[in-house]
Image 1 (cartoon, rainbow, N blue to C red):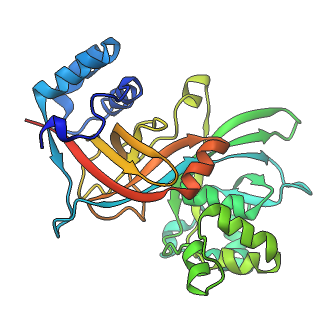
Image 2 (cartoon, rainbow, N blue to C red):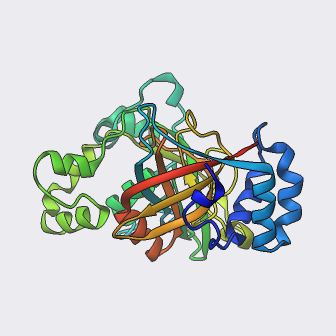
Length: 319
């Protein structure tokens, strides 16, 4: 494709995208490694200088499905931020677990329901809680997003901000609780706001909803410095995600570290911008499919929870 065919290419403010590209250069793939010296040098260049360098060295390639379809779907994800306690309390009762010691001895491991009801599963989880949160639905959201920030009250009453990052799963299949509600005709709006609205009206069915997804994610605790807090968690590429400039892709279609031009318009937002393929997810399959990292906080949660709109992508590939 010609550069002129990329919608909005001349208008994008490339500064944040260049930060994301510099992050990718911490662990570049073989295709893009030789360009990382220039990427770092151009981090203080003007947008026009960056665009001119891209035109000189790269060629946009339209991403299509194997059936030749250039249109796909964009969804969003975010990094939840929750209040938590190091020890269980009357308010904070829902454990966030690290990897069980015997995880490798049973594949797949206990499912969500078994973890909460079987004595042998409970015994394996004894002493493995990193922290406790107040709401089991928030804990489920944390697991689906794959990482999060905890405002953690310690045993001595002090507070600190930490990150819990993805460490592994129980290797059970992921089942969408939104799809479970839709299949039973219980909701028409299966976004997270819609799911929470249904739960507010049907609190007695909360456990049933949670158990409909057998997959559980386990975490590892990481310190969160001021510098770390300016970026998201590490994605599957192994580099920190940049809000609004990192996407999750199917790595079988788009390699990690690939610059991608993304265009998507819908009821939630209009996006025409340079992003970096730095993550993946179990629901992200196929060529024209991406999950947009919205960041953290309330606005990011609202956007990610509702985002589901048409998508076009072009990889920015070396000539």
